Length: 254
Image (cartoon, rainbow, N blue to C red):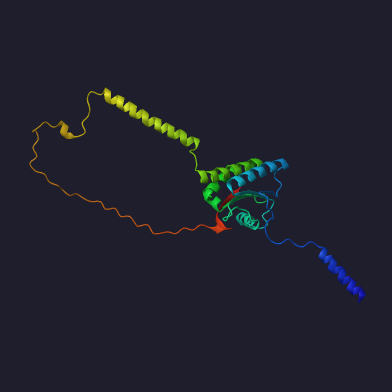
């Protein structure tokens, strides 16, 4: 009996010494940059972390980057949403913030923008940001990709708050159009001064007085055209709400 009790106690002690299986869920991390896939050197991590921290403080919205070796069975969007919510990212009552997820096993990138940040960075803007960072990701230049992501977030959030300036190309086009209009006006005035004979706007200017007598006038109805347009039906729109505020989302491969 004593040997049995001793064996039982040893068995219980052995079981208690074994590590418990991790609870199902996403990576636990409260840092703005979590490089779980180890894509950056320490110096690069310091640079990107400092950039994210500066932007997050300036615009009151968490700018977050997460790199993973594996999605552990999640879809990129599901992991990004769960990671953002479970680690309580976001500032203010709407938990404003933006997150970039990089998954190395599937070569996926995904971005979500939450709260007020989703108004600054829409689904279409996320696609544009993806077009900017994917070339760097494909080349393995992750520092440049993350710096470009931070720059894009600053551009859209700053523009949402303070208004977007005209891009350089747009400003140039406006200047060219204004210059062309002014040139046409000046040359038109010069041409008008050089012409001694001018065309007449109406046929009456070419008729001699009392040379034409109209004795009968008749209005003849020929046809009519009726255009019908269907009255548009009322539509309703809805925005996704998650984690304390509206959320935009998008991603792809690199």
